[in-house]
Length: 184
Image 1 (tube, rainbow, N blue to C red):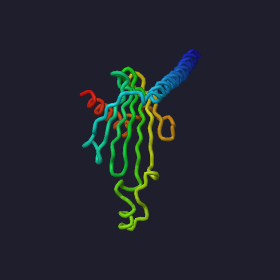
Image 2: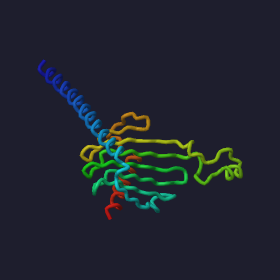
Image 3: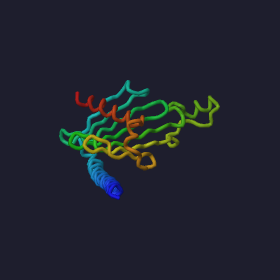
Image 4: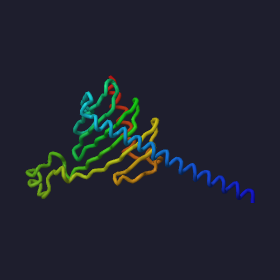
């Protein structure tokens, strides 16, 4: 009987810890959203600096950093490819990423595939940006650690699975590389 009580108390404790953890994540996410909105609404007032990211992707790219004083608040990165582009927006507070939005656009045809090229190839469809497929992932960080991941459907994904996610791996590597280029 005593073993059952101990087991029941342990189970109840773990459920309470899970609920508490969820509440902490919800509170952290709300704080992140507030900070994100503040940076987004002040974006036009920030000083900007841009660098070319040629050689990092098939069609080149660009990084733009937004500063409030000397502090980087936002880093916008775009890599162009023949069949799409990858954009990432990293939001900073006190020098740390707290939110990142990754957007991958997959084009219906190559960017150079105009109506004439399509016609010459017997293809009824030319490049049309409106037909691009968009995949977005939202990543929430606290103290340098990923605490929440939302996929394109804005559905929560297991945080532990992010380390195996190609988009997340590219996002993290790209942030470090491009941010270092701005530090030079």
